[in-house]
Image: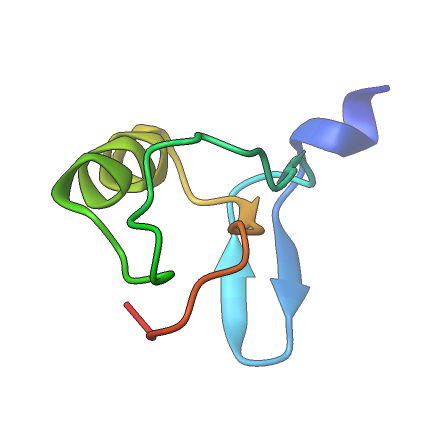
Amino acid sequence: MEKMFEEFKLGTVKLMNRFVFPPIKLACGNPDGKVTERQLQFYSQIAREDKMFLLQEKKKEAI
């Protein structure tokens, strides 16, 4: 279990731990698939907490 908290290098990106945040359906996207402000705020909050591998839900445009 201690290894989960060790730094990890994924390609050229250095992660602070080995946790993966899975994609979840927020149900707050636009019907046309475009990213909403609410989605940006949610993922920004998660990313600010710590460096980890973050998988995002399907969307039409890149963030």
